[in-house]
Image (cartoon, rainbow, N blue to C red; front, side, top):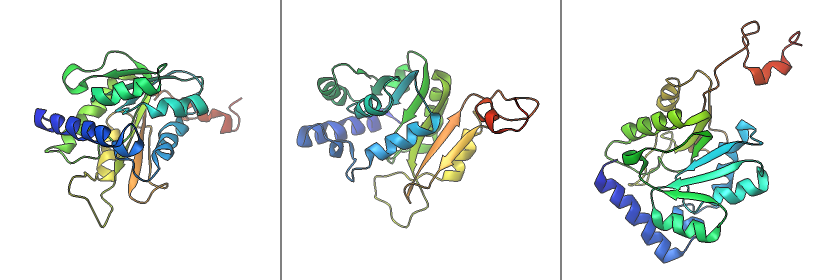
Length: 220
């Protein structure tokens, strides 16, 4: 993502916020499905405690979702757009929300899980490099793993400003970080979510990851 594209993204969301106010539609979520995306990004990890980073958090609405469904999880939100973060702080004064340019300055800290919703949807001059850069960043700063959603290229219609990723190519990229990965395309027809679990130690006797050992006969 070059400087011109960053300015374009900042302007797009700030103008939407000024016009619509701090509502999901200002973030491009026009069909009421953002909570479904939160559920999909978070549910497979079975979190009860730990540190969560919502990368590209917008107003930090995932914080409210976590308060209701994952009260033991410590939420952190990070977004490029200071206007969105300011609106989020006004809405959720107890939430830890930060604005910054991770492409330029990186991230400061480690989290158990990093999730990203919608950050890969806009058409850029080089989307694939952006995806690779973000995956590298997430892998360096996540202890347990990371997850992100994408628009799929298995579609018969595209808007002129959206990027649609090849699920097979994204899955192949995930295997650079771990062989413990999952891709879901069963909840919406034209979107998918990718999960990269960085916990790769397994039981050498049964060749099973630890959290699945209770289902193995004779494993005690």
